[in-house]
Each structure stands twice: as C-alpha cells, then as structure tokens.
Length: 66
Image 1 (spheres, rainbow, N blue to C red):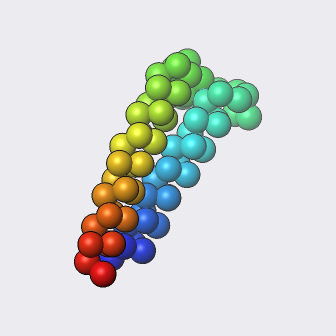
Image 2 (cartoon, rainbow, N blue to C red):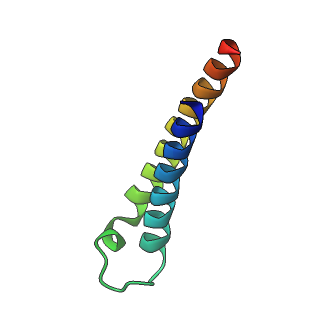
C-alpha cells in the first residue's frame, strides 16, 4: 500500500512538472497553458505543498504500523 501510494504521488508530481515546463518554455508554440503561466506556476507550488503533506502522512503512517 505504501509503495503504491508513493508511486501515484510521484506520477502526479511528474505530470504537473511536465505541464509547468511546457507552459514556461516555447517547446509547443500554441499550447493551452502559455497564456496562464503565472497561474500554472502558483498551482505547481500549491500542488507540491499538498503532495509533500500527503507524502509525510504516508511515511509516518507506515512507520507507526511497523
């Protein structure tokens, strides 16, 4: 369970990171995110904070079960 949760968290964070990279660079000139770069950046910071809290709770919960 712990490993699955951590893999899902990693995949979510990597997908958000890819969206951030696409929005901040001009790899794809006509992308949806290019007009909302500031919002995408703030969303990345927010999602990273939530994922860190979730990661810590998964790690702490796994440590208490052992």
